[in-house]
Length: 243
Image (cartoon, rainbow, N blue to C red; front, side, top):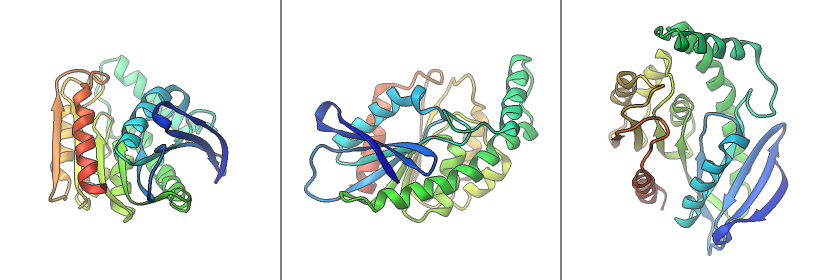
């Protein structure tokens, strides 16, 4: 990991950009802490520059609760090299949506499964590097999407002890099966009228999770209509399991 820049945000939050090999990322830490703090990994759908305002807002909330937060760019997003197969899958998805046709399993698998296979080891490598920094310690949480990435991380990464997952992306059948192996506490956020989300698929995924502690928080509204108080619920969830 190579730190490339740093600046102070409101409330004294320290924001540091870094690269992990060729992967860009951002780390936010509280302005002052008497002891090493827990870490929350912030998932997103890709494009750090576009997602930055929302990620920084989420990170500020984490810091206010005494947590560090970090994120990395997804494969094929931002300035990272494009994958022709992924680009084709996105084009196929757009065509299906524009035509009002059902999105078939082949398109979903081609779009999501390679992304999961590539990105999860990168998240784990980032976690190795982040936990080696002074001032950051476990436990670790995962918050956000792409939900399939969160599911895989919850299965394979023992350092993640709780996850707040954002429903709202297509989920391959193979990921639904893996969800049965998830046992950590889960807080799942669902926008009931999400125009790009198959509500029943999201409910089926929630039902598949093997966790004894799992809660589904459904709010009326579209994909970007998440109410402000939803963040407060998530903060209480992470305070219970990371604090």
